[in-house]
Amino acid sequence: MPRASGAQSPTPKKSAPAREQKSAASPRVSLSPRYVPGQVYRYAMEFETSTSTTQSGFSADPQGPSSLVITWDATIRMEVLPAEGAAGGIRLRTTYEKSAANIRADTFDPTADATIRQYKDLEGKVVEFTLDAAGKVKSVTGLEGIVAGEKAAQAARDWINHLDAGSGAPPGGVTVGETWTSDQPAISLPVAGLVWRTDSQYLRKEPCHPPNPDLPPSAASTDSSAAGLAAESCAVILTHLNLVRPRPVRDATPEDYRKNGVQTKGAWHGSGQSLIYVALRSGAVVSVSQTGSEDMDVTLTSNHNNTSMRYAGTVQSRSQVEMIGDEGQGK
View 1: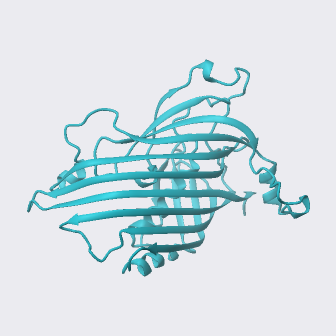
View 2 (view 1 turned 90 degrees about the vertical axis):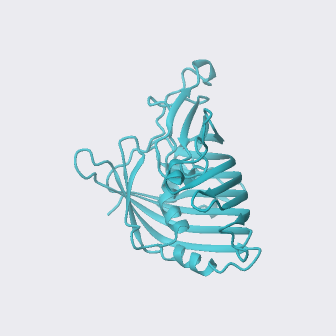
View 3 (view 1 turned 180 degrees about the vertical axis):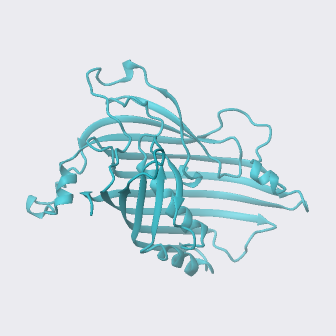
């Protein structure tokens, strides 16, 4: 899924013609967050990645697990800070109030304890994200010296991308029933020329937090922030993601691999789906539910000694990000 490719700016491809819109009279709404300095949000998140792989060749680890499940649970407080300078962009200060990981493997994993500690080390730490005028992440500060593990560092960086619901949407806003497409280069993969193509549709408008029919009214929360979220109206956005190659490439080896004397060959496939609730009043993402899968079979060959490693398998992922508090103008 695009989570692995970092914060990049998708390229808008097209929007649906007027006949695909549900109603010509439906108002256009912006899906970009309208952050105001002093606002404070709180999000609860769960990310799970299930990996089933086989490796053979020069760097295979016969003792490593072939099936691995990592689940990360976190609660994050996000404060909107003033921009630095005239063109500094909005800054988001995030505090990891809770961060815990669980690992399951089909065989003994000697790195499991260290990985769990790396996620735990995020707890209490502060990381700042700077957004450009389009709401895209352009810089991340604060991770230096916090976590040494790449999986934990990537998770700390990439979760913020779930809050960008307007990627590739028409700049003038969208109406109920409208569709649009955007591309995001999959530059982190060992196969060149692939992009994540996202097809999105504004399905409908409904309450951001529909009441639970299984609970009596007396069981509803009396917390003011929760009550405010429940009263909000949201745009419901459905997206389908597919890993595609827009045009043929002569060599599937990415430039970074080539510079290091490694040639790559093989295939990588991926798809996914997400459902996003965006508050119409503020443009803030209220919840995101996403699932995805990737299948790969890639061989990496070193030009230095002509040895090879084959990496094949599947990756299943699911994630849930939900706003659990909107404190408005924070202290």
